[in-house]
Every structure is written in structure tokens, then in C-alpha cells.
Image 1: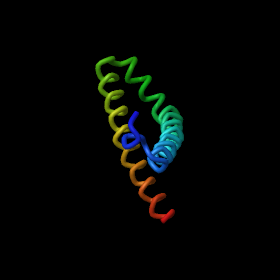
Image 2: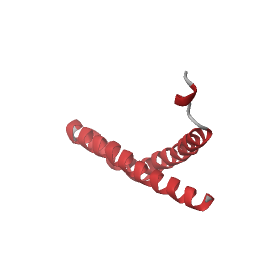
Image 3: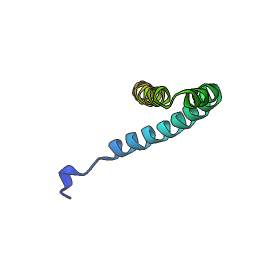
Image 4: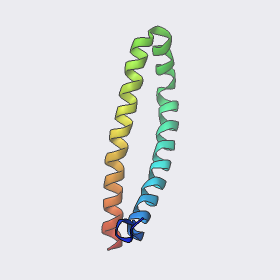
Length: 83
């Protein structure tokens, strides 16, 4: 790997911080969704698998968008505080 294409220390640190934040947020989201939505999602699964699939897809997309927005905001906040 040529030296100019090697990631610098700041990039690696930023990636590791983002990875740690994602791990905490995904775990928290999973536990909250399981607690608050578990019964409804199970009822939807028993009622009609097509509605369940649509709801599951909406939850997945919503989680992805929400976590990306939150992580972007948190990293910006952390960078502003560290300067």
C-alpha cells in the first residue's frame, strides 16, 4: 500500500469512535424495540405476514436513517468539544 493512500490516525480514531457509538445505539434500539414493540410486531406476524414484512422493513430503514443522523450529530458534537 503506497504511503499516500494509508489512512491517518485521525481517520482510524474517528472510525473506532463511530463504531463504538453504533454498537451502543444498536443495542439500545434493539432492547427498546423489543420491549415496546415486541407484542405488536408478534400480533402483526400472526395476523398477516405481508404486513409484518412491511412493518419490519420500515423499522429497519427507520433505524438506519435515525442512527446515521444521530451518529453524525454526536460525532460533530464530539469534534466541536475536542477543539
